[in-house]
Length: 218
Length: 155
Image (cartoon, rainbow over the protein chains, first blue to last red):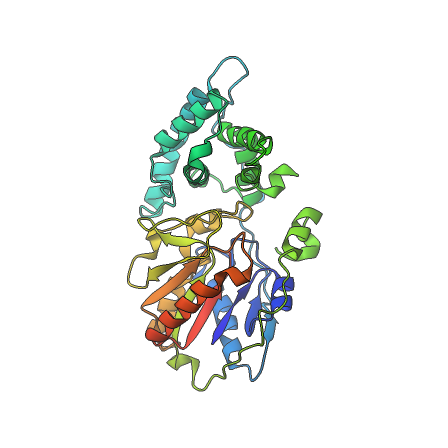
């Protein structure tokens, strides 16, 4: 038998799994709030109780909204990002310089999380990935033969930035982090440039949709 | 929060495009004992795997086993979608894969036991029918592990 969580009520309504607890939390947060065991237990208990239902399908609503993801008055980012200008810096140099400003913060965050980091899916170091991404942009080239590496390198880099930014004083909420990353960092600008290059490619335009969120493109 | 009415039109339309009819006649299994006696496995569609396991492809209907005895802090995520928050998972694996919470339930005697192996799929880019083969394989593996109930989490 199964029980579980749904983040989109309409999907559970239509597919009718035997037992589903709908939660009103943001996508990516099915248990509601990180590092809040009591809240997570309330979600789990509500879903496990559905196992006792005499008949189904059962679609129950969890009565609580998730607590806020961060402070609303988060400070401006203390790290000044410098995007490459048209004629001065190369992408390679700009991305490497930006990475260096974030390394100490990433190290700090990693120590706070007892060494935990999600970076590393690509199998290459951040420096290797950043230099290669920068060189591709400097040459205005797409990594056509290395799409899997490209996607994982971008994900690694984004996670590295987010892990570094969340280690800085003050707390950014999710919206602030997204805005900071996509509008104030050289890496965000670089990925948007890749997005445009992929969009213009006749056979690889689908790649543009899996490197930049819809919220940024609309 | 994910109330469709609160989302931008493009996001609402995308999520509504995932609305599908039931996969077939509903299978219903009655609970014939206490939850405190059940052996439970976790299954996530978050594209999780241990760092040294192969990552998921852009679209991928395979699954990855997640040993219950390994440190879940070594899990990474190679989900192909960029349209959900990954920051929370960087802070706490239990936000997506509540393994520590279930270990606490087991220790407190609120569930019978935890499965030896849990499972991870990557839910993006494919319709449910594409997962029939791998889901059937996992069902067989769960039976071998004498699992009574599965706790499903999306991302």
